[in-house]
Amino acid sequence: MRERLKVDLSEEVINYLILPALEAEQKRSFTNIMDINKGHLLMLISKGIVTREDGQKIMDALEEISLKGASNLELDPKLEELYFNIEAALIKIVGVEVGGQLHTGRSRNDLYATLARMNSRDSLLIISEQLVRLREEILKIAENSLYAVMSGYTHMQPAEPVTLSHYLSAILSALERDNKRLEQSFNQINISPLGAGAMASTSFQIDRQETSHLLGFNNAMDNSIDSIASRDYVLEALSFMNILMNNLSRFSHDLYIWSTDEFGIVEVGDSVAACSSIMPQKKNPITLEHIKAKSGHVIGALVSATSCLKNTSYGHSRDATESFKYLWDAFSEVEASLHLMTATVKTLKFKEEKMFLRTLENFSTVTELANTIVREANISFREAHQIVGYLVREMIDKKIPVSKINSEIVKDISKLVIGRQIILTKEGIQKALDPIQNVELKNTSGGPAPREVKKQLKKLNESLKLDKEWLNEQQGIINHKKQQLSKVQA
Image 1 (tube, rainbow, N blue to C red):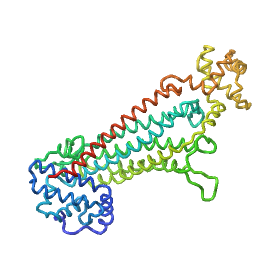
Image 2 (image 1 turned 120 degrees about the vertical axis):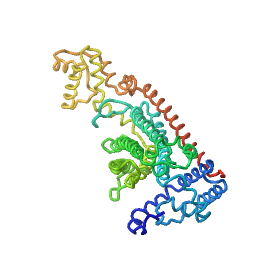
Image 3 (image 1 turned 135 degrees about the vertical axis):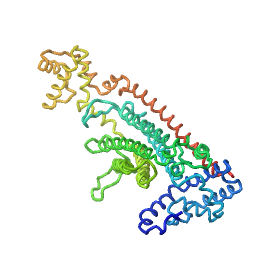
């Protein structure tokens, strides 16, 4: 295959380019590249480009190589690619006159473009499976914490009472969108470039739809140049993973903060924590730290791939191929993070009594007091906001707890702030300042009232079931095609 060149590859090219890529591909790509070979061969036979007799010999040899496995494939870096090493093993068994026919009607370019898409879709389905499991575990906690009242936060300051279930419903909503982005990315990836040749297709009368079907793709790509040049799906997959990891990082950050002694409202299990080498009291939530850091790695992968591609011509080139380098790392980081997050969520212990007591003390209920003033005194919300804001300032300055707010205080403050005495009923004040009733009052669509959160969780559970069905369907299609390829006789 180096007939055009007069000298062999330099040691530098072998050691720093060829060998690392070859060894990585051997581990990552052996099964899929063998499936591509089998699918392409079956199409060549069906179109009469390879005789059935020769095709059977090639298929038997491919089966023999497959059964021996990737670890038993002898690698020669001078052959440059995994495919050529497989071809050399094939020719060793059946001879070049027969084995050399397998590469008819295709190029390294469309072969590896197909392989990259198959590897990517496999990884996406693994991530989808882990994402489903994580959502299931979070949903379990959410369904059991409908009445676990806690402070919601904005700017990391106590804002209004919500429930743990309401918070987790928000996290589940984000992860649901992540799964939708994953499915969209999968559909963009799951189209076949095979048969596009080097970039201008081939004069052999191949059937690209047949190979697409045999390999479990949804369709064949429409344009041969686009088939081998397109890498936008790499950026799309990385973008999806970047958003997912960003959501996981934000969830981890909340848990991380809440697990501090200063908050103390959640504790991770011992199985996902580590100790200090010197401070015996320490219990460090290390999985949360790693997930947050791994999110940074995926950001780097997205930037790297975009940088590799931005000034490449729309065709095949090695710098475009470099865009894959951190894609595979990103898949690994995301898979690891989902496993770690799921393992952590399973161990979480929320301190519900402490969460509730915080809402009694941190003035997070007083927005509803302002709402009560609007309803009972028939003034604007802005005026009510001014009254309550001044009231809170006075009580904090004088170290008076929120539980001491009464009609007299409201009357005095309102006279001072708006020049008019506002008189509230004792029942109205108590209802506004009681965290449980406060949450129950927030019963508009999307709110934290338990009956509303139940509706949210029902929809999230239904969506989760649909996503599981989608995952099972895609896994079933691909596994079925793999079984057909491994069993079929030419």
